[in-house]
Structures are given as structure tokens and as C-alpha cells.
Picture 1 (cartoon, helix red, strand yellow):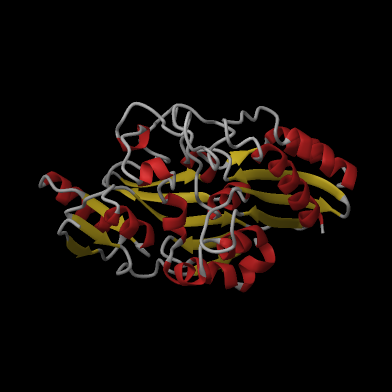
Picture 2 (picture 1 turned 180 degrees about the vertical axis):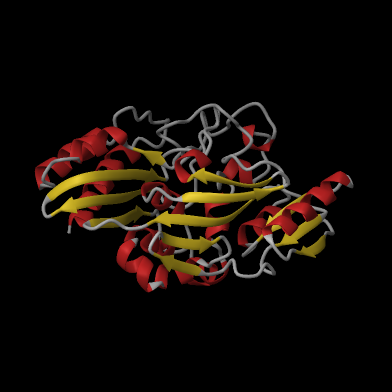
Length: 327
């Protein structure tokens, strides 16, 4: 492992400045909050930093704050804290469930919401140093290779899937991200934060060099809102979603006033289903309607050689999540 130095940041602006100063000096800098993914990337020699900017030393960014306007979540808040927070479990169930399903209890105790949202792909070609699109190469080895867990939506030129559990929930909840960098602060809707490979094959989100995700804002929960997160894994120990669905329904008794449905594990970004949302809006959520919505959820899916099983699995996950959210 390459020798590197540690730099303790006092604030998001300070962290950004420390990273920018390292780059100006010709050094490579990375941010580390919980640090679990960064450590793995360093061990695998995918990143070889000269400086690790430590975000755990920043004050007041590891809290959940509720108000009449909604909920503010500091980027360094742990997944365990989010999964156990009473207000989130009650009014933003989909996020609490997503956070509680990530990784293992040990990782949830240190892993942060910002780190979970911004983690890099877990494609075995990328993680094992192949010169693929994500590693600066010019091909995706999974396309004709081992693609059992790769994308059925939005793929090309890379067929990675976004590994975050919390990202689909945050998109479904209409969250807004506060990003801090050398140019100051900017606010980005969660739905605009993630980037398809065809737009940028090297990155999974809109963060520029020396920018970091500082905090997340959730709008106030509306009356009648119900939400659930359902996830299928290939094994119960530490792993990522093969398919997941984040469902947020705003209900008026048995009638759905509005719906947001976002898939995980099937695309390079959290994959929203606007057509399915329109099918549910203004309708009673019945078993029959949920079945029809599940069929529509795979419209446009394109399987690779070894992941066609994800199509019927997606149908089942969407149907179950809709019915669970209905209550």
C-alpha cells in the first residue's frame, strides 16, 4: 500500500480547500468519512492517494435535525443512526429501511450516508484492476463476460449498477443534496445527482474534483404518505442489492394521490419508473393494479447474457414493495 498522509478537516469548506491544495501541489487527494469504501479502494490499488482528507473531524455533520420544513441529515451521519431514528422510521420509512439493510451492522456503525450515496461501483472487473471504462480504459469487460449482477437498464458503454441502498430511497423522497467545493455551495436535487455512463463513463455523479456531499434535506412528509424499501440479495451476509425498490405513495385512504418508484441494483444510477408512477396515481392500489404495475416496471429492460433473471425478479420486487407501501 502506498504511503499517504492524513489531513483533518474542520468543515466542508476546509475539506474542499485541503483537497484543492493537495492537487495544486501535484498530489492525489481523496475524502474519507466512515472510510470503509475508501480503505477497500486503497487496498485494491484503484486509488493511490498522497493525502486522505478526514471528514470525521468536521463538527455538526453527524446529526439528524427535524423541523416544520422537513429533515436535514448531515453527510457524516451513520447508516445505523438513520435506521434507528424515530422520526425517519415513522415519516420516511423507506430511508430508514434502506439504511438498515446496507452492508453489515459493523459497517453501518461507521459508514455514513454521504459515503453510501457516493461509493464507487463493485463490479469485479473494476475492483480487480482491469482497464475498463471505469479504470480509464475503452471497454466494458462485463458486456461479454461475467455480468450476472450488472445493469438491465441504462447500460452502455459501462454496465455497472449503482451500489447504494440509500440512493433510490433519497430519489424517491425528493431529497436535495448540498454540495460544497472550491466554488462554494450548491444544491442539487437527488434525481439530478447521478450520471449515466454514456454521459460520463469515469464518474457516477456530478461531483467535481474537490467537491463533497455535505448534507441532505428531505421535504416535510405530507399527510397520508407511506413508503417501503424492499431488497433482494444473493446472500444474507455483506452484499449489495441484486434488485431493490424504493416506493413512496401519498394515499387518500385507498386512493393513491401520487407515487414515486425508484429501482436499485438494475442500472448505473437509481432508476426511476415514471410510467409506473402514472399508472398508480389517482387509482385504488389493488392486487390487480400492483400486478399490472410490476409488468410495466420492466418495460425497456435489456438483459445481458447472464442476468435475464433480473427481469422477473424486478417484477416481483416492485409488486411486493407497492403492496407493502399501500399498507
